[in-house]
Length: 116
Image (cartoon, rainbow, N blue to C red; front, side, top):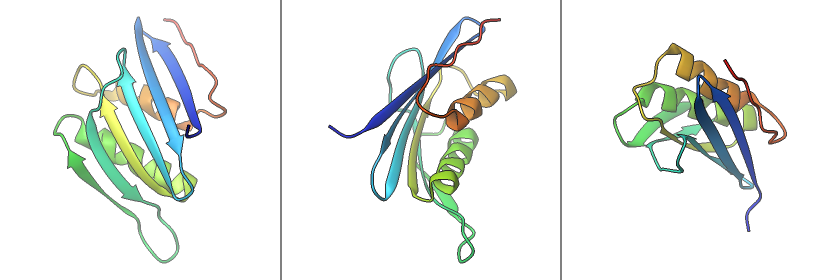
């Protein structure tokens, strides 16, 4: 079985999750609300001195901006190819995007809970 990390945040009565699988040259990340589902899918390569990095949407139309941004963030932070899926029940807004970024930046697979 591939090594993976799971993280969760509970905010405003909703549970947001991130499941990450790390390979030697890539990181696969699945962001979702409540149930595990495949969502809008983006692929990104890391930024470095030789390349500005880039990302593309491979599947889906909902939440494309946040999906690309998360893929680019994870690619740059890991220095690996990032394949990222985002499935949330509503169109993303500022507060939801903030939660997803918090999940992406959390470390060590700990469950993070915040109740409001």
